[in-house]
Structures are given as C-alpha cells and as structure tokens.
Amino acid sequence: GGGFRVLRRGRACVVVAVGPTLGPVLRATAGLDVTVLHAATVRPFDEITLRTAALAADHPDVVLVEPHLPGASARHVARTLVHVPHRLLALGLDGDEPGLADAVRRFPRQDPRDPRDPRDPLDPNGGV
Image (cartoon, rainbow, N blue to C red):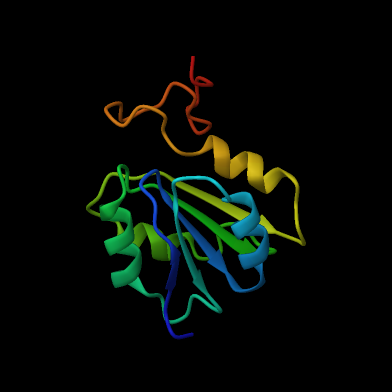
C-alpha cells in the first residue's frame, strides 16, 4: 500500500474506498460535495492524508468502505482522529451494493453549525 490517493475534494465529509470498492464508491458519491480517498490496501495506514482531508472538511466525519468486513480498519481511523470529534460509518461491500449510495448520501451532516444533525443515523433516539 502506498497510502491514500485523493481522487475528489469536497467539504461535507471524507469517504475512504479500500481496494475494489473504488468503482462503487465513485458512483455512490457522484455529485456529492465529499472528499474521496482510495488505497489498494490500508496497511500501512496513511494517517497524514486522512487527518489532512478530515480537517479540511466542514466536519471531520469519515465513511470507511472496505471489501467484505465492515469496520476491519475502523480502529485506524479512530486512532488517527483520536483528538478530533468525528463520526465514523464503517461499511463492508460485497460487489456493487445498491444501499451504498443511500448510506453515503444520508451520512453528511446537513447543518454545518450543528454538531448533531437531526437525521443522524447513529443517534440512538433515531434523530428525533
């Protein structure tokens, strides 16, 4: 792995595509104001590129899309952003899942002033 390549720059959040998830991630993020990073493998983990991209966004939130197992590299993201309040959505992708586009489109916060978007899918109260 040679680290992350920045394929698209945006402000809403950072979407990390690992290995063969790149095509589905690019399709899912088409037209969205998000940064897209890609690496063939996450080892060694490129903390510098991820931290730089996250801090450049309106919110340092990360969607991590890996082949097969969701969250296999989530600990690396958490360690990289340990001192930065952030949200992480870890997805595992087997093929081109139609739910990926919906998940990626729903994840970014809508109000840049509000640290907790009322539509936050990770809110235990369902965002109500």
